[in-house]
Length: 242
Length: 242
DNA sequence: CGTTATTTGTTCGTATGTATC
DNA sequence: TGATACATACGAACAAATAAC
Image (cartoon, rainbow over all chains, first blue to last red; front, side, top):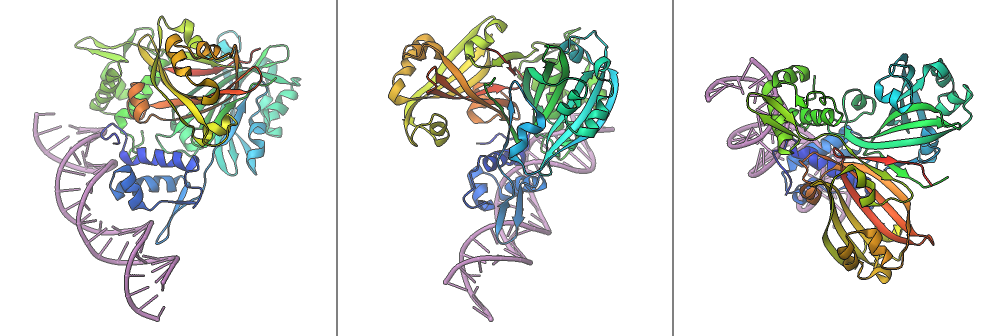
């Protein structure tokens, strides 16, 4: 039935499937999880194993166990983040959350890695401003970004970002009235280290990674960004649009 | 150092990181993995643990251990699958593999799930033709698709697909000369059941899931498809185009 | 009001897998 | 290779809280 002895604990596999079912709205009628004994029978495992899985979901604030009553579902549903010609981080999630918050974790000016200079068509080792940010929707972290801007043109953009809390506004302060998404590359990996902490994920959680290059209206690259989204909280959508 | 009691065995976490490093081209210069003792030191674990991780990668045909010499890297690099206005499964991967093969696993005509009828703007429970396919590049499975076509318009499209091995050709046989990608939704989950077998993945492996709706030139929905890509073999790219 | 059924919470014990030395 | 410590999974209870009668 379910894979054992594969390097992934049974309780975690079950936690994954339950999280998915919750996000899929499978229990929306009652707002409660089925009883542990029922879940154990459904997955063909011991009740203890189901309890471990539920404890893991409770840790993530997805469910709340209540003795004598059952296990309540606290959160469900994905947010959608649209990727298109004019992709803006804050704007994309705008209507889907009551409160959206951006936080600048770190800013530095340094020689950029080769992947960055290649994408921005800069000479290898060119200095760039690097911004590390996290965005939260209704108190839940939903994205973690690492951005690079050519330092020659955008020195001090970190201060502009700090003032406005917006990349769009910060770029405008440097004369970039508008910018377009040139390319986006999407992959997915298991969460690691800093991302796990910042996005409040448990080990084994999946992050969607979008690597993007933005250009100004003259088609000159202005930003290279790698944004990580928790796959259980965000879906990416691609909308054909001008 | 690395997370314990996390539901994911250390050797699997390390296998994940090594697979990522290999795909990232970190060992391209030599084409060999560093010695086990070096890897053990780098990850801060016992050599046995590294050996378990390497055994797992060998099982996936990613590396090949050779007595007295070292561990050779067999495969690396991602394929890129472009998503755009005119997304075609075979065409997208065309130039990146020597040999591309599509296989029809199953065809059926049945009442479609609600998610499908909603997306295709059909009445709930409308009959659809369902096609289950796998695509392989150079002998490696790279995608697993489930497609739905309204049965009233496309009855027998399975035969057309069987003849041509192409959705584009099969649709053309039904008078759809061209079709466009209306929407795409991307998420990522752990591989399960049938997908694990068909894509030859190990448990805990990540699959990128693209759910798409295609319409004909009159903007009438013709196809609903859910395609699963192994995240360690495929990256999705979003290209703004005409 | 107490009784009963349901449901989560806890404690034993045992066997196997994981990781180190 | 064997010894050791801990995590995982199962099984069989029993305790505690809640709801319905």
